[in-house]
Image 1: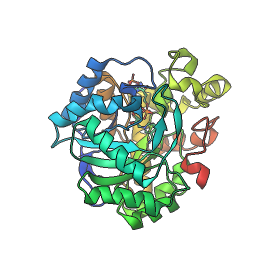
Image 2: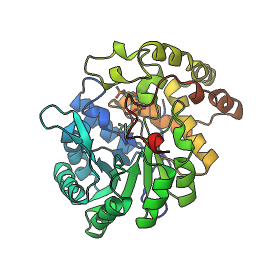
Image 3: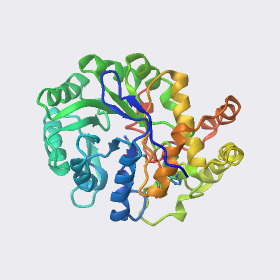
Length: 337
Ligand SMILES: NC(=O)c1ccc[n+]([C@@H]2O[C@H](COP(=O)([O-])OP(=O)(O)OC[C@H]3O[C@@H](n4cnc5c(N)ncnc54)[C@H](OP(=O)(O)O)[C@@H]3O)[C@@H](O)[C@H]2O)c1
């Protein structure tokens, strides 16, 4: 496969220029089975060489270990890497279980310093609120994030899993560069309010899980095939009867992939890029991979163009997906719309 060098896009009005596809680093430390640090680090280098510049982590991935993993890489390439991390999901130090969400301004001030320390940098390029706690007014939480920009600890602000109305309210407090939420052939609820609001405000959209956590690639048929501690084993879409039904929904992707000589992953990524064009907003999907081979495959998708007929085949898929995006939907944007 010839190496693709990605074109760039502005990450929100006035935001940094980034390659049109980023890299999700979460799986390099946790959630999706055994990890290989050497291959993960080689994948980071290969990504940068291909024009990927937006690297996505969060303080909760591996309970801080993911930030520690990518810190040295980011420091070594500080002028090229656009480093994105997130706060707000609280985990137990003993067992890693998720214990809640905090948008409290005092907590935000502590969390940013902890992320800066683990990353070994003095500024985070893009700092996201990972989940919204509706009990805390956005004036307080986004207000505290804006103070971090003024203090020079953070360059740009992002939000994750917020509704269109919340994005508008936040953007009026301080410009939001990026909205990161799940968006894929299988997950389109964001097109109700979040995507139109982002388009209207000039906020870039960063689709997470654009490969449906790997299910859209055909790499597994049921999460019970995966390792015992794989997070997807508890995911409603990828196990049991839902997985069997959802697997059949991949037929149009298989058909397109076979006709075009590309992979299912590439069809899924091309769809996200083109669906953003439909809505008229900048998009930087962050497919997650820990392997160089898959990275090359995924970046090559950024230049694949699906035809109108192929897009029409994919149009009904999301409406037929069985199961929710999460076992517990309570902290998603969909729950507050
Ligand atoms: N804001 C949020 O709430 C939130 C939630 C979830 C994720 N995220 C971020 O979004 C990033 C991406 O989402 P995600 O990792 O959940 O899901 P994803 O990108 O949809 O899928 C990742 C999975 O697909 C596999 N994969 C990647 N490329 C492949 C290919 N070409 N062929 C076959 N399999 C392939 C990966 O395995 P290998 O690693 O083995 O290749 C991994 O298991 C994460 O890394 C994280 O940074 C954010």
